[in-house]
Length: 491
Image: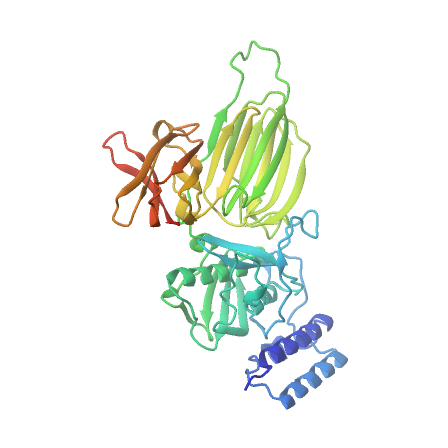
């Protein structure tokens, strides 16, 4: 017989949440409070519902409280770390992350993360109003659990919906580590290793959205080791551990743009700069930041990993877990801060000092990045992230994306191969080549990347499953180097 049990659970959760948020915070010790109790079973009867509703009314009237300590403005790492349990935090209304946050100088950390095929998860906004870090982490996790799949925006998936976790979270914080214990009614339900990793991505990114928290250890049912299908969680994880990009070791990139006539030419005129950004426009999962020289003279630019202060989100409200610096010497720009709050780009800060302008890009995580220098007008382009399966240390393929394709398509991307030569071929399941060619990028054999674009025409008889391979040939032994493989289905 069909019941309204899930609806009853959410009604109870919302009522309990309102009682928690409106009552005083300094009377009832935590270990005696109702929030420390195990969530109600799914078979809630009418009388249990009535009893709980009456309890909430009485609690509100008497001013008793379920919280263990008042809110504090101290950094997370400096706060005490009691155990906090969240009893079915109410479902939040999910909307796509806005391009600006509520505060002009702060990143909005009211975010949960949804899965995207072959990409790191993407953030979406939820209201998070709990007073302690432990409760905010628990609220994010339970809000994520409560988001129905039919509420998820197009192109995203919530793998926690209708899964083993139905509520009940315990959180302990020690320094930058959060230990999160989930009450699981049954083993996790996933279909394959890719789905298991995607679910783990959602959990790790959502828990570490809390400022000051970089690592999270997930356990289940009172501290037991958590397992998602064949994926065993037996150690603390960072976002970089689960992002899908593997080890990222981006080197500092520097280019000298000083005028050849220096020092005999006239004194340089400080350059006037403008900048712009995009997310998911160039290619799936790619954030692009562009600095353009509108007039005047510029001398050098450097792109590098930012310092620790630019990644301390517990102390500085506009920072995130990771940051890049783009420094242009010989410029004057009015300092400013723009809150973006789109995955993976959260904010852009510009500062001018010592005859140079530094842009700090606050990012969700450490992703591979590529630097391109374009002319007419002069532009420094920084591309961040992308589909991990289409990017390696010398080749990035932006189009076509994995999946369907016609017999004619455009192959585009970036490369930094030997002498800029990039080869491509389309092969069938038996490794027979049906089309091939070469293209030359705008730059090669350099720390900077070059752009390439080539039109591909497949034979009229081509139909079915194929693989596009993009690579370069070693001048030493003729072997294929850094091959990117993109599956295609030609119809």
